[in-house]
Amino acid sequence: MRERLFLVFMYAVLSAFALFCFIPFWIVFINSFADESILQTAGYQLLPGKFSLHAYEFLLSGKQVFRSYGITIIVTIVGTALGVLVTAAYAYTLSHRKVKYRNILSFLTFLTMLFGAGLVGFYMLIANWLHLKDSVWALILPYLLNPFYAFILVSYYRTLPYELNEAATVDGANDLYIFFRIIWPISVPAIATVSLFYALQYWNDWYLSLLFIDNYKMLPLQMMIRQLMSNLNVMAYVSGSQTQYNVVVPTYGMQLAIVCVTIGPIVFVYPFIQRFFIKGLTLGSVKG
Image 1 (tube, rainbow, N blue to C red):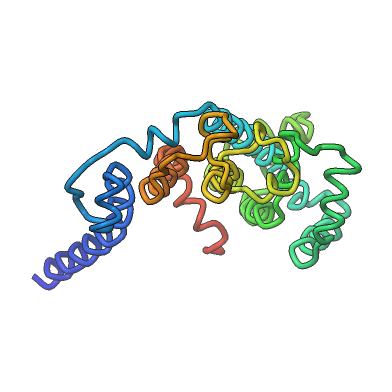
Image 2 (cartoon, one colour; image 1 turned 45 degrees about the horizontal axis):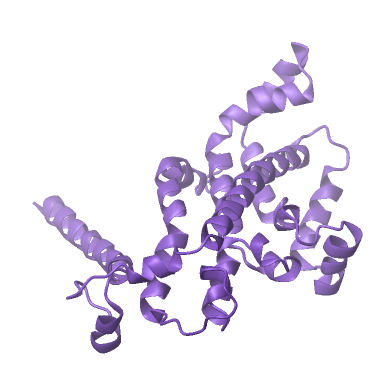
């Protein structure tokens, strides 16, 4: 009876906590379809009295939203794929016993987490030396190798039995074959976790576009929406006109619609890798 009462109590607490977390998302979603006059007079409600699609129509009425969406999707997919590949390979190098200078490389990698080159040096490297200004690669290359994600993979690789490498080496396999055919398949939980981190980083990033993108047609989704909300020239992003200013903007409704539009793809991606993500979070927590 005590165990049943405890289970009932825990289910009640978890259900209440889940409801507490779900209500803000529901308020944002349902009020994004509310009429602007209702939001201005009654505020945010669990079930608005009058619905309207004016906020979504205003937001999606121009081509720039879809163009920025495409740029963000391309940056997220390409950046995540390349970032995971480079980070996983580099972490494997740091964890390999036969790499002579792995300790020095680990120290240099950790040093970049403590000290940076500063904004001026970073801007000169990307814009002046690599000539990546107004390029998609300016949104991908700076985040290609994250030291923290690399150390997550290093901690996982070190839990794998080194006898796998020795057995493959005896059979004549080289390092590339060992990494892609043996280490990579058994590292799916850790790689899936790092992939989610990279996808979130690329999808939500606006800082790189603020520094290196001047052409508004090349702006990713996050930066375009920031400009859309802060720039007085709203029509330049919505309908392409720079002369019309007599536009009634559904301010509150569009802010909520923007949240729904930007968070949607990541919400749909997460359930597919949730089981790998939960398992990957426990990496290095148990030693034995």
